[in-house]
Image (cartoon, rainbow, N blue to C red; front, side, top):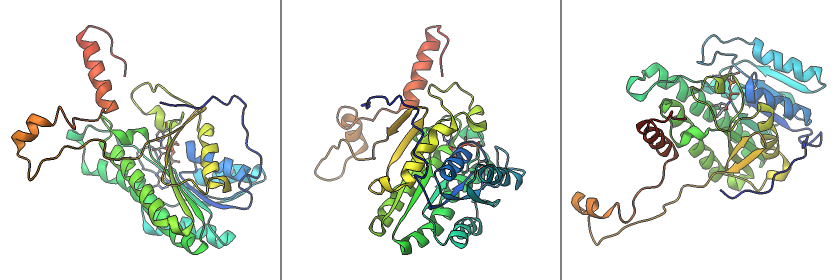
Amino acid sequence: MASDSAVTTKGSAVAGYLKGKSIAVTGAGRGIGRAVALACAAEGANVVVADYGVGIDGGDPTSEVADAVVGEIAAAGGTAVAVADTVTTMEGGSRIVQTAVDQWGRIDGVVCVAGILRERMLFNMAEDEWDPVIETHLKGHFTVFRHAAAVMRKQQSGALVGFTSGAFAGSVAQANYSAAKGGIVSLVRSAAAGLYKYGVTANCIAPIARTRMSANVPMELAEMGDAEDVAPMVAFLLGDDARHITGQVYTAVGGKIAVWNQPVEVRAMYKDGRWTPEEIAARLDSSVGQERMGVIDRLAAMAAAAAAGDKPNA
Ligand SMILES: NC(=O)c1ccc[n+]([C@@H]2O[C@H](COP(=O)([O-])OP(=O)(O)OC[C@H]3O[C@@H](n4cnc5c(N)ncnc54)[C@H](O)[C@@H]3O)[C@@H](O)[C@H]2O)c1
């Protein structure tokens, strides 16, 4: 992977980077969402702190979680309002956006960070492990983006920021989460395409950070950082310097920011007329072949290490 030179300064952004902007952050009560909400407020934005205050699996909602972050922002001299509603309903998404519009007359950015986990191997996964994960992540982006986009289209400006995960490229025990995160990438690209002519951008962050969610992942992650490390990239995407950036997925972890590629066809094979399965079997491996899949490569390496008697690393 190509990389630019490391920036070693501590890089605290100039206060006021988002001065006067009206921004809603979902999942803002804990982890990365909280860090994003605090950073936006510290940079001068008025912030809707939207969080349902649920457990890691989506249960036991409480409004205390959103209220606590609003209290932190107020104590630091910032402006925020809490919405302890769920992103899984159209009413919840509407209320989050409308709260910003009612309070401050407009909505300049929405950041969808809310998320839950229900891990299970695909062959054991129950419907009530699939549906809530898709509803919280994928539908939870739709409900907020949908209402924000309608206002931003009229304003002729705005920024949508989604949260995906490296797991969108495939996951062993999180088919529900991976599918939702892949859907979010496609939703963000579609929002970027559909809103381009209205001056509204849509981008995605694939974060890695120490939170209760990452603590729940059963393997050691090679890269790690703090939730506060993710926030500056989000602030940048919400700010005036990023109006030309849309349809992108950026990893943010510690001091690393990386851009993901866009899906395109890479190789093709042709014949005059229709292929037979036998003809495809004879040609495919040596012509179009396959593209490398990181998760499968790692599983194959672990199996090879185990077969050689070495202790496999995740
Ligand atoms: N932490 C990581 O390393 C990591 C890696 C990849 C992706 N992500 C993604 O980043 C986002 C934030 O993750 P985190 O680690 O900060 O998680 P977290 O569990 O610390 O925080 C998630 C927050 O979302 C809220 N939430 C859950 N369901 C909600 C709903 N229906 N409506 C409103 N709020 C709801 C929770 O109450 C919680 O405060 C998630 O989308 C996650 O999938 C995190």
